[in-house]
Amino acid sequence: MLQRLPAATLNKTGAFSAAHASPLRTAQRFGSQARFASSSTASPNPFQSLVYSRATLASATLLATGSIAWYTHLYGNLPFIGEVHASSPGEVGLHPAAYPWSHKGWLDSFDHASIRRGFTVYKEVCAACHSLDRIAWRNLVGVSHTADEVKVMAEEVEYTDGPNDQGEMFQRPGKLSDYLPRPYPNDEAARASNQGALPPDLSLIIKARHGGADYLFSLLTGYVDPPAGVEVREGMNYNPYFPGGAISMPRVLFDDLVEYDDGTPATTSQMAKDLTTFLSWAAEPEHDERKKIGIKAVILFSTLTALSIYVKRFKWAVIKNRKIVYNPPADKTH
Image (cartoon, rainbow, N blue to C red; front, side, top):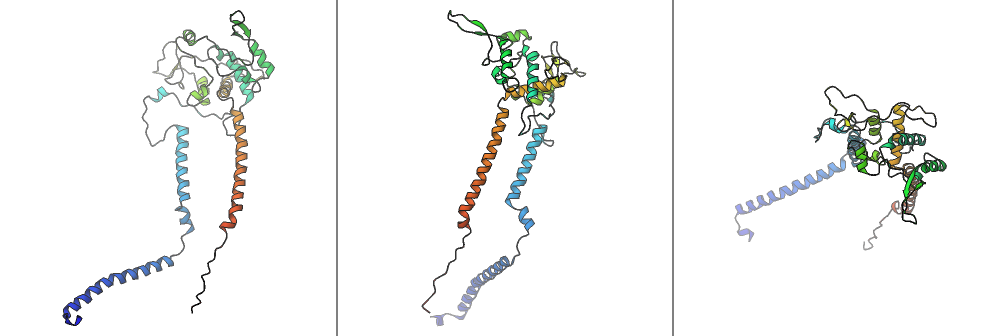
């Protein structure tokens, strides 16, 4: 039948076959070149492998994020990103400086001598207006005072108890289970005695204020005369660390206002430091015990982690390091 076809048709058919066969040969030739190129490529540079690795990328991301978070924690905002506030910096209050408190480190505990002195300042100065509702007399035992000392201080206070057998309330000396007495019977009496302002409870004041101990120390030592152009209403006091700058509480700490048992000079800054340390402990009485338990937990879990890694390597080393060899069956037909 091919003999009946004209020669021109056969020529066109051959050209079409050649045209389709040419890309196939090109692809095969390109594939062989590609395989040859990939097989002949030299091993990558170790420095490039380190730079472009996922671990390096994750480490750089964590470093950048941590640096931004730490800078924001220290200074409040980033220098190249503006912030929008509903209030001005003057209304927020001056940002306090960071002080090196003895209990600030991960493994540091409270200065218990400072706690004892701070309780003296609270008892003789602050207790006239501010309550400490979350602290009982027994909480002071073993922290700042002995049990006998605390019992004597508690018995100096009269507490209302009852009813008795006749159904009447009666007065009794305080005991270790009683909480520190409040200066006013209720909030209305407290407002009436302070020109309408309610003195806050100091049990959690360190945690309730931005800046914590740094803010409280700065507030206690930051009373100054108002600058030019700033007017303070009658009965108010200027303190740049207080939001708004005007605070109803006057300056209460002055040199030699109290007398310490250990002979420490009672300067204004010393009393502010001791009172701040005492209120930091009052906000977190379990602070020292929590850190001791944390150290024990870190040691325990580190030991368990090391043991688990050793057991895992001991159990899996035989399996992961074994060599599997496949010997194909010999062809016995030839």
